Length: 263
Image (cartoon, rainbow, N blue to C red):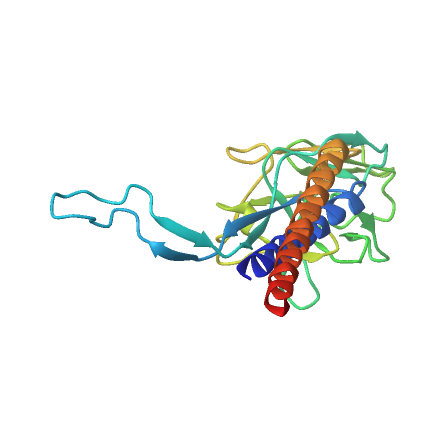
């Protein structure tokens, strides 16, 4: 019976939907995380009577026809790249991006990754790095004798040193943006890499046209809304249960038909 297969595709789709929702909830407190949303499409149709088919020589046509669907498939698990809430941390190496842009990170294999997670540390050589020790680009090196670090909204990094009256310029943080930022590929560790869907990065200084500004001592929270995710989880669960009931009903109908033949 066709309904068994159709309902099974619905159950698989909602199972994947729950996986996406559970990942969003698991990353509720992940800095810079961007939530995902599962999107679905209907499968091919078995056309028993095509709409618009002529039914007589007087140009009368079938108004709607007969088409039987074969279920649902997952179209994408796209990311929602909306701004997350900025939370103060009182840590001088923490940076939050207010607006468009990603911080560039040099990976050990030579590739460049992109992140909204601005929770940085200083390694043994004074370089500004991620929690995994990846150096940000352009490279910023903090002097050992620095007493305080200032990062402006436009990305200028300055250090106060006891031997100088004026702050010492350390470098300029740049941001990268994409035509289709939802097309970036997530590789874990709060990092993304470019794809043919995202397009090539356009770099620029924070605060310039098309780029967001930086806020020192803040971090961007995940853009996950717990209430929305729980509501979506309940809806997915109910949809799964309804598809399961269709399978049960179809099985009962087949059982009744079998009993008729046996009788």
